Image 1 (tube, rainbow, N blue to C red):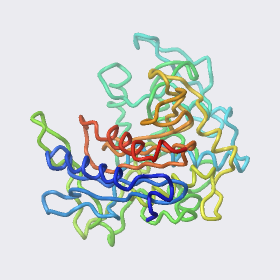
Image 2: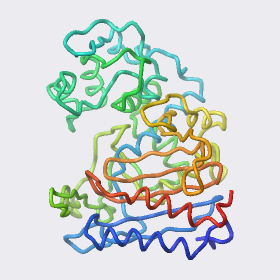
Image 3: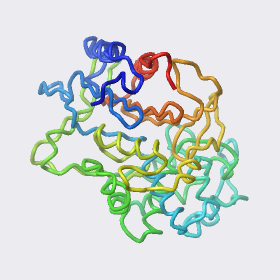
Length: 384
């Protein structure tokens, strides 16, 4: 841990973060947190509050393992960009070149009552920017019912089987027409598997996790580590925390579907190393994962969507609003979050990384915003 003042932070103001997060725990609004902040390559805040397992009174530890859900997307995106750096794919390549099942995809009309053959071919860039026409199947529209009928999210299936199912469901719009968050990143995981000719998780371990010393990251938790794996909670209608998934037993074999969009488990320390690599333009501790220009391409605002001042890059949300304010992220910052209220952001202008880990489904509380605001307020004179 660095002395905060050495990198432009106020130690006194950083302490307010722990107090604020403790307030949510004391009110029994969330089980616990791990908050991490790094600046200029130095960790200035790495604190835990609350429980990773309320029922067994196990506090959050510095090495607690969390489900990060959609914070998996930037990792899968980096895997794709590695292949791009190696010249094995081009961003404008049609996906059907690698996954023949996506040839002659159908597209729904606006009412989703009829479909026709797509006029545009789905490309790798469409998948990276969530402009592919794929969705998540959450809702009660005809496309959502097809996702349910074909059991797209069947946990015992393979990536190949999932993609085969997706190829049979009409897209919700022509590829490239607009932005829609969905299973595009899962398809990218399978594309990595096809192009690299190795299982997706093996590629991640070989090209990202091992080079970056991300020792607790993957689609499974070894038996030796299950005691560190957090339970997960959800508030009921009265706001009371209810256990959704209990922590595994010491004898349990914990593994997950290799979803590039949401299947990875990790620790805050591991994910911080991943973020530091991106902040340092693709290199960390002498190990280069991506070219500098490739990281810039990944974090470029490619696709404007519904929120003013925001865009979508490749696998990350990008701030585009100028002069975002002393208490907010700088223009060019990029971020991501997960279904269980995990969150991270990287602010290149201020050389700043923030990570907040918890395990709370259906979050209704503003702790992510409060954590970020207090972080920026702790900068000395909003130092840049």
